[in-house]
Length: 281
Image 1 (cartoon, one colour):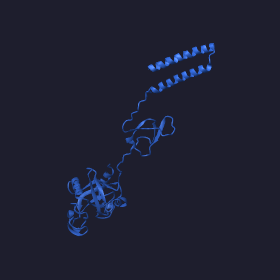
Image 2 (cartoon, rainbow, N blue to C red):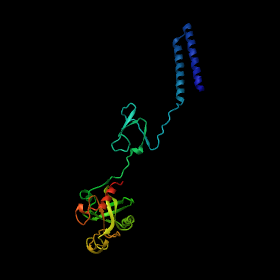
Image 3 (cartoon, rainbow, N blue to C red):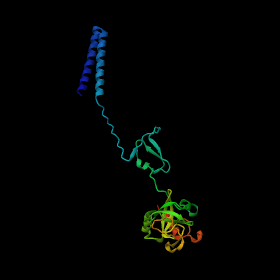
Image 4 (cartoon, rainbow, N blue to C red):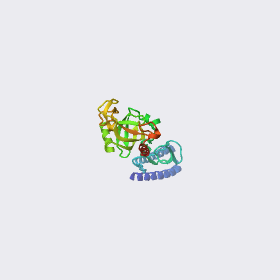
């Protein structure tokens, strides 16, 4: 601050000197060349001093850095010319709420979490057994089965069946989960969802293994088949799973084995459960 005062005082004195000297020059008609060189040198020296002072004084930045909340993103201009707003277009089906073409003011912040589309579970499909479901769950394939009421999941391998899927627990652990859901082996029908190849299919399952004996080769003539089936063809492929025989899983319009008539032997309890499963989330 003292330096500024000195420069101002020096400038005032210089101006006074110039005025007085000019008057003297006019009167005395001194040598102008010598005088001009002296005055130009003095003026240039003063200008340089002022410039040095200005550069040495720090410039205070009154701007405040904008704090952007965590989990948000500031919208910067895209390079397109808009008067007051910046247009951001979200594709149809994106995670932003509201209209897909949204106008966002420049400098606004939006949630980056909402911009990331979260994966959702695929819809539960209610597929006709004859035209679709049997091909999505072919013999030899393994699917996850989710019980609608408990949310418990176990794995079942389809080993037989034409009018519906005849399935077997993949491991002893899967057998134990089945027994925990049904309270032991039971013919009770329960709504389930079959998960296979990224698809979710509405179905109904009875928790009673039948027509098999784990101690004998598959398809051999075996005694003591499960659930009172006596002696006959052994429907037990998966060994060591603590389950003798197969359980039934029904899909839309599937039938029981007794005859091939959809109208005559469609199991109403299974079909009701399939409808329940199709409406679950």
